[in-house]
Amino acid sequence: MTASDTSAASLEHLREHGFALLERMILIRQFESRVQALYAEQEMRTPVHLCIGQEAVPSAVCSCLRDADHIFSSHRCHGHYMAKGGDLNRLAAELYCRSEGCSGGKGGSMHIVDVERGVCGTTAIVGGSVPIALGAGLASSLRRDGGVSVAFFGDGASEEGTFHESLNIAALKTLPVIFVQENNLYATSSHVRNRQAYDGGASLARGYGMPACRIDGNDAVAVHQAALEAVARARRGEGPSFIECLTYRWMDHVGAGDGLEKGYRSREEWDDWVRRCPVKALEERIVEAGVADSGQIAAVYERVNGRVDEAFAFGKASPWPGAMTLSENV
Image 1 (spheres, rainbow, N blue to C red):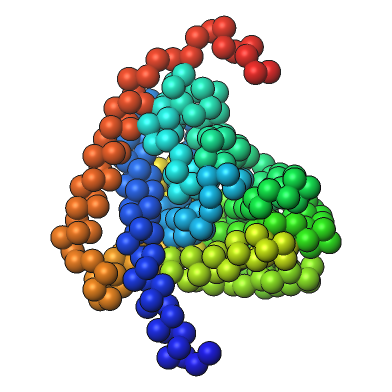
Image 2: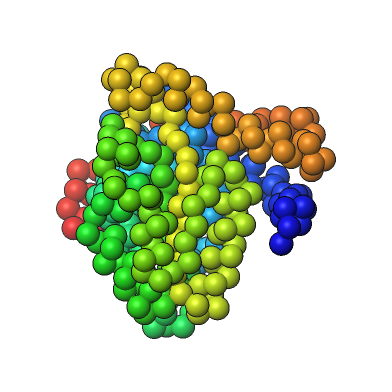
C-alpha cells in the first residue's frame, strides 16, 4: 500500500468512526477533569490515578468490542470503564465510596467493576491485569463463544514475570487476547529509559511469536485501526496481538496535581505532550475532514458536561454503605 493509499484509508476511517471516538474521549476528559477539580474538597477519600492525556487508547480499543467481551485494567482504570460503557453515576458514587457505587463503595478508584459491560474488575497490582485477561481468553477459547479479552497495562508491567508468562501461554495456546500497553514513559516517577534495556513491550511480544505494533497512542484513528485488526484476528481464532501505544499522562502518578514540582519530568517535556493533546488533535482532524463542525463539537461538550454534572450530584447524594455490608462478599 502506498503512502497515498494509507492516507486515503485513514481519512475514510476518520469519516466513519471519528465523531463517535471523539465523544467517548470528551466524556473521559470531562469526567477526569471534574475529579481533578473536586478532589481538593477531600470528599473522595480514595487515591485517584487520572488518565488525562491518554483518552485515545481506551476510547479507540473499547469501541471495537462487544458488551460480552472482557476488559481488565490497572489502577488507572476510569477511562477504560467509561469507554466500555460503564455507568457514569455509579463510577462517581464509587469515587465517593458510597453504596450506589459500582463496587458498592468498597473498591474506590482502583477497583471498579461492571460485569454486564464486561468490566470484570480492575487491579492495582502492577501487571495484574495481564494474567487475568489471559484466563478470560482461555475460558472463551474453551467455550468457543467468540469472545475477546483485553488487558490494559502500563510500561512498568513488562518488567513483571507474569507479563512474560502470560504472553507465552497466549501465543502457545492461540488465545483470543489483546495486550494493550499504554506506554506513558513513567512508572510512578521513574522514566522508562532508566528501567528498561529493551525497546518497548512490542519488541518483547514479537519474541513470543505474536503480531505486535508500536503506534502513536494519541492518534485515536491509528489506535482504532490497530484494535479493529487485532479483534478481528482474535475472533477468527488466530490468537493474540500486542499493541503498544505511546502516550503521556498529564497528571502526576496519583492525585490531582501535575507533579512537576517533584522534578522527575521537565516542564518542557510536559508542555510538548500537552501540545499533542489527543482530544484537540481529533477535533481538528474531524473539522478539516468535514465530518463535523465546531458547533457540533461544542454540542457534544454541552451534552457530556450535563452527564458529568448529574453523575457527581448522584455520587455525592448516594448513601454510605451500612456497617453490616463489611462482611458481605468476603
